[in-house]
Length: 417
Ligand code: HAM
Image (cartoon, rainbow, N blue to C red; front, side, top):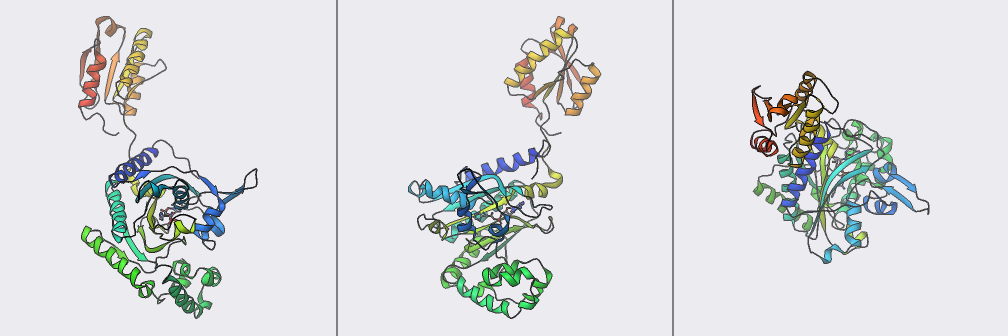
């Protein structure tokens, strides 16, 4: 679990504000749900035999002996809220997004943490593949907006309640014939969750399953048509993708389309965003029979991807350097006025030499420094130094707030350090 400190937090704020901006363009509204839910919600939705439910949840009893869990993901809580507030009665298409911390007791490494953050979206009510394409177009737009380019979109279809059992059976049969080559974990889960074997990172398991049957060969007509139409839409929108029939996802609620945005920049934690369709989930949780699709991005991974292109903290527009008690008092009042006018104004709070104040202004990257001493107070004129070109000009104290605001807001004063 990490602290996110100034210097890094600006990148977080940028990634979050771009999410608000882009998702709202596509008709999504923000939803905020609690970070704890009843444990049962996650068991029923994510699946009892998934790694998340079997070994990664932070689960505890409260004082009334309710079993509660810190949310390991956002889809289940958002569906719970959707059902509880009957959101489908307000609009046949609910488009929701969320951002915030999630908790999984995983082995921490680069890009994998126990408290991490997701920015996610869910669109409920439309089963047309056009909606799948719209979600992927929005994801693509987001990556472009935040200027993260080194990612590839992988898509797959996991079938539905009709055709998945057939695939599961075929795969189990195939795995049975190779059981001795599989790792201990896979020998155990080939019966409970055979699809996960395809996702196992152990090289022996990957080798033993290279020619495993493909889920795409066993889709029913409806799922097959859905997947083909999605591809046609993506082609038309110019969204590049790779079909990856071995992508199985670690949550059980998916049906039909699944996808991941992967990168080779983050070692084994290669998914920066992931999601898919979950057409039976809402009904399974006791709600109406409505289809849904969504994704979540891992914010820590996005921040890692930004690497050197991190967003710098904004520089002060004006630094007030004052000499003498009267001038310091005047500078303090003026600084507060400038802040009210919408300027990033700064001063050195402790009485320091002019040289020390100039050094501090330089360190903060201030655009202008306003120099104010007893002499300037008496003459009614301060000195304004332009820190970009080093020039210094007098500026009248009368009406200085407006004059400075005009100068700072007009020029390229909002640049980054
Ligand atoms: P997920 O694949 O479990 O899907 O997580 C989505 C993303 O969260 C991952 O691709 C990754 O970027 C990030 N992530 C997951 N675990 C960690 C971790 N321990 N540390 C850092 N980042 C992590 C879901 O959670 C689904 N709810 C997505 C979804 C929404 N499907 C439909 N709607």
